[in-house]
Length: 532
Image (cartoon, rainbow, N blue to C red; front, side, top):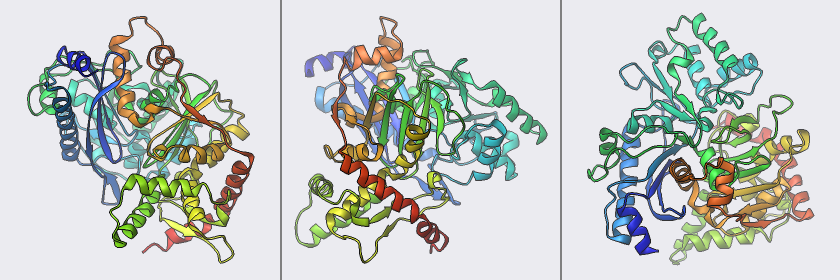
């Protein structure tokens, strides 16, 4: 393996996927069999500036450069060689948000991430105008909110893109976007594989009424689907990515995608009647549906796979942050007791102990809202643990309540799909940090969704690996397969992972938990209203 990987890297045929996650930028290098052979990482955090969640341009470039440098170090240590050329590159990032630029390429406002919930007025107006659910975090909501707020910069917007689209543009010079990421800017039409022309026309009328000198077609990136060429690494881009100067220009790029799309690819869930759940800092489920839903739902976003199939997405702003904070308290306790903590052991012990708790968590409830949560109608968040004196308060129930909280909003949204829309799913696959402790997050999610949940050994590779697979699909699809067949036959070769089905008691317990959770939401609302 080492010798083969070394030859592939030296010959310039290794393929690179880079993903900007919420807390980590990750690079994964794969070989000709789609297996990871090296990786690099860079940890980062968003900042709350003027009440808006953002990452600075400096943080973006310092992050991707450090991540790539970390990859180079990993390659040198494992194989003793330098990366000089690559077979293909793909860039992905957390979806949506707002990055506006003027005609000279100057950024007009700080990057506004998916986490911001200040766009309620715009999203409501656009949802009614389009008769289509337009989420708070979509680029079109951010643009129209800026217009409604009379922000000075809106008259000068010449290009509007996402984080993945921005990085791709800077590395290739191409103002393009993958259809999955593009569907989080303004809805796309799966038939035309482009922005929905009727909605674009309606928005253009709004721009005209406001006296703004552009149309959406003039400022949005061009939509591309998986497998289409999206430019090559320029000399300037090579210097921006690899500050050592070793990486040569000319490397082909696949379309930049959002983290939802790379999650679908990494879990082999781009075919109709398949789905996946990504559970980390935020969480979202993606179910590839066979047809449009019967009506718009505020909790469900309609996006697409990287090859343009319609997807019902339930996106939750909060998932593991509060859970991790509680585990951190137990780490402090072990240190206080003079024990050197092993975080993997602490997570493993606490998570597995949670499964010994009552199926309904003994009446305990946790609200894990680090930020606002559109699923439950909260513009701001405040982590909150709720119990009464009659509850069965013990460690197992405490941990189980916090694990349940991590997927509670996912359940609320997916109950609409399965119970009201009668959506059929053959396979749901989980990936992300919640599933690191084997079998626990998987079992909790299975109870929440009342469905078998699969997890693959590759689940830990995450979105950067999924992005590398999309880059590989661009250059290695010698049989001209569609994306679903390429993943099924070439990448995964029939592997569907390990599946866990919930017991009736677990399903009933989670249902009881969620009813209490919904009934007690006014407590969370009051906590937000009285936040110090």
